[in-house]
Amino acid sequence: MTKTTLRHTIEGRMPEDGLVQTGVRGVQLFRATEAVPCIPAVYEPCVIAIVSGAKEAVLDGYHHVYDHRDYLICPLSMPVEAGTPTAAPDNPLMGVYIALDTRLMTELTMEMGHATAAGSVAEARGIRLSPWDDGFAEALLRLVQLEDSTDLAILGEARLRELHYAILKGDAGAFARQAFAPGNGIARAIWHLTNHLHDAVSIDDMATRAGMSRAVFHRRFKEATTMSPIQFAKAMRLNHAAMKISAGMTVSEAAMDVGYVSPSQFSREFKRMYGTSPRQWSAAYQPGRA
Image (cartoon, rainbow, N blue to C red; front, side, top):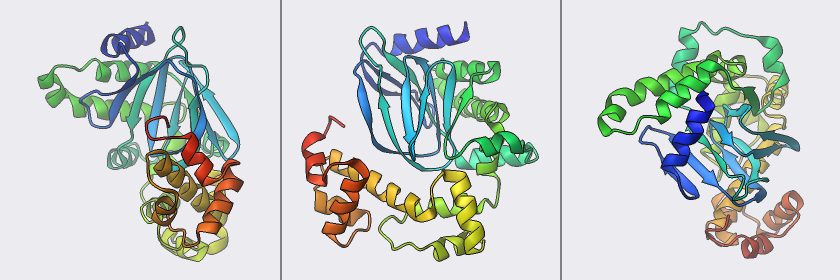
């Protein structure tokens, strides 16, 4: 019943395709009726909940297809490919995007006593699907139902906190708590990398920033993301470049913006990653389409 009410609420606020701000910080509603193949994207820490249709996210070759039965949680910035493979006018994709508040997730993790569930954490890398539970569904509905400006101002932050808590208590809670635990060196290294894409990167530098030896850092980084640190850095740069080109930036500008000095190296690595040259990508994904 809660999911049905959620769907009707979104339908009432989104008669057409698009992305709509709810008025609560970091929370957006979306609707799509056109199938889109998986293309490069960068997921910032977020939860994506689907109430109709399905989405797909690919991380390092692992395909995650999810619908109203599971929500996706991505606690760290991740280079993915994402699409809407089944969206159609008679089967619209509708859902809610929640940008996870790092400070809030860390505070709640500390208040919950850093509870862990090692088995469930080890099963997931980078991103994870989690089944809806009553706490998550009800907290999400209460948040999405806020429309009045006074209600949003007075209740918005409290209901956002309630939703974050429901996520941390859910099936993927241990996975999320591990990512947001204070002193998480891998999270610190990823944050620095994603905010300094134009800088040269080395495993030794990242390991030092994480406070680990090179060997331990390499192992733990791959456990958290499925990729080695250098693979991750390359994927993050190329995905950002592909998104910038899709948004209208020239190939050379995009290459320099993510730290490539050699245009030929950028073209070679771009084609190896996506199977097409940057210029062919630019022609295929004009501004607005991607």
